[in-house]
Length: 539
Ligand code: Q9C
Ligand code: ZN
View 1 (cartoon, helix red, strand yellow):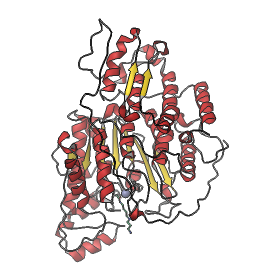
View 2 (cartoon, rainbow, N blue to C red; view 1 turned 45 degrees about the vertical axis):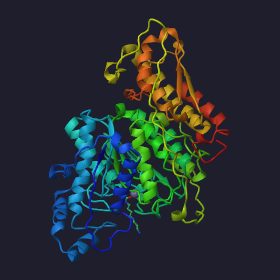
View 3 (cartoon, helix red, strand yellow; view 1 turned 180 degrees about the vertical axis):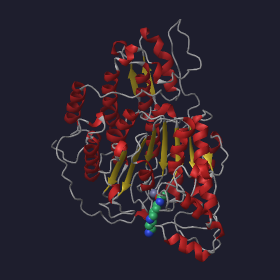
View 4 (tube, rainbow, N blue to C red; view 1 turned 120 degrees about the vertical axis):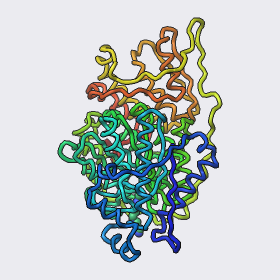
């Protein structure tokens, strides 16, 4: 956990009405007030060096930005005009170096194991800035720089970037569109290209280029008012299956909270508690190595609540019960269907995606209620259990001390490797069937029974227990049989909140497994809305 305060020095009124310094002060204040700040390790900030910045940006652009602190206000105005929706202030070069440097300090801390995960509260944001251009309040592309840095300094092979900000991070897309080592996922308000930045290449059919084909995933929202179910559907039926197949070594989140209710830019209706679940669902990837870096978020109340939900989940507290999961809307399902179809040829987990030609249904205009007047209940205070996990053991079995992490998929035994196709099928069922069903059912207790004859290897079991802890506020009871002693340690480790080891790169699930999972999903989806993946209810 890391936090930086960048101070604006506008004495007159700020040029930008929404990307304001208070975004950081209210977020930090909320973390302090809720007691979360005390539980985080604060990491000192540094300025990104020229070499860091040049990982993503051109020398000409860096040199131009370097001059801005010395420009007259008139020159600054002119400099600003060559870019879209960005404001240069004499102090912004300094702040932008700190913002990128903060992301790098966080990557260092996570990669060296000083902390498991963390969030960098920074501004200016980064995901819109391009190799040689500022854009959309962004000067340097903090997360893109962090991804290149992690690859270069730590030899990280695969980076997953999840951009849940409500705008398309076109700068991130451009940086990595031909790079298969960085998987970029973004959902964004699009409205059939009517919404800023109004780019053709923000649509679902921009899937990456050359060697990077398949490694750029765009989910365009063609209507405003998207809700928790819409976000969760995209995670269960698209992002998570692909992410598990990709098997990242590091997860970076472009953590913009303008995708939450009340935001004047996003105009969406997902509540702040959804970020607890989005965060939780990503925390078992990459052995738990996750760095969230603030991007947008302009409703100060919604922003502060969302930041707290994210940080509290990173700290390992159980997620609150997910609010109003009444199924995705037609427009979201249309988007989901289009993206799954566009990516079917690149990801074996999507191979079975509905075969029909996508007929894009054009959406009607949205009901015009004003977003700024939206009210939502403050998320209830989340509990931090004083004792997290109890282990009840039969006589003669000693409690596993240390509950050590069972790391690296490299040392899987051959028996397990022969079962990897089963693992793929199992994960397919967990992500696309069990999780959405469970979320919609909203249990108050998860009772997990391990049958010794299921032959489920321990790391898969750990993934399952980890993912299911997002339900029922983490209330989970695991029952195991006597012959399962070797599984007590991994189970306790998962219940204690240690991330599951990654599963390695999974092969395609067996066709017969996919067929039976899909047929079950089709039979159940009339009753369980979160099982739908298309807007056409007859298929
Ligand atoms: N009339 C981020 O959220 N458009 N950037 C403003 C005002 C630019 C958003 C339109 C929005 C940029 C990081
Ligand atoms: Zn944004």
